[in-house]
Length: 239
Figure 1: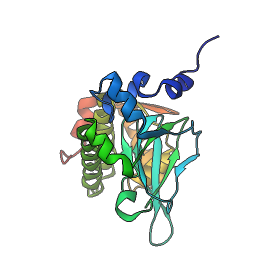
Figure 2: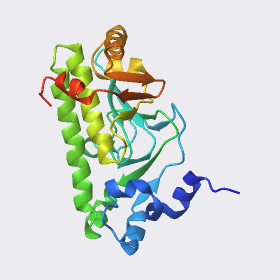
Figure 3: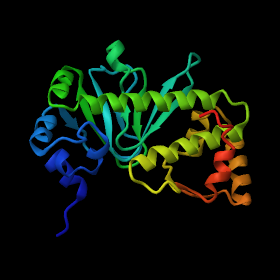
Figure 4: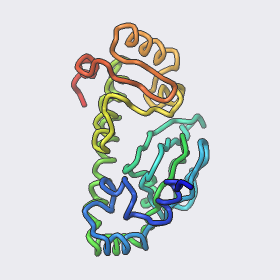
């Protein structure tokens, strides 16, 4: 009988996890990986729409995506949902809870997903075993992604916003070893439009225009980049 890969990951932890090359486990030997595992709690497999944590939950842990994709969202002053980000394997989320003691957003799985919780009380141990530099790198990458989003949202042209998001996503996924031409996009177009500060109609119109021009091809859960140079030219070169 075959072995469920998710069960294997849970049973053997960091040693067999493919995400270890881009998370806090990076460059640790087998003995140190065992020590790191003592500082990390891996979630059960969350299905689509399951919550990893909710707005207002205690923020004693931050999380690294182990598999799948999560979206984070918060509420505006008027009570409307705003999608703050989409997070792929090896990316950090939930860090703001370290500042306030409670999470300022919610994290929801977009497909079968898992995440590793890093407790704030274990930060000293993580640095002691040599994983601190990798943790700081994850924090820096999160900061970089947030700045890219801010720059994107300053663009008045919808095409600039959408192209900028896709170009940065290509870079993020290439870091994980994925083919940068095929982007897994399990989020709904409604959520993506919300994240970019656009209407669904505007996003659909731009995607339709790009499909006709041969820039992209879209499937239910992916976008294929057919003309990377043309897409990059639409970013307004502000990323």
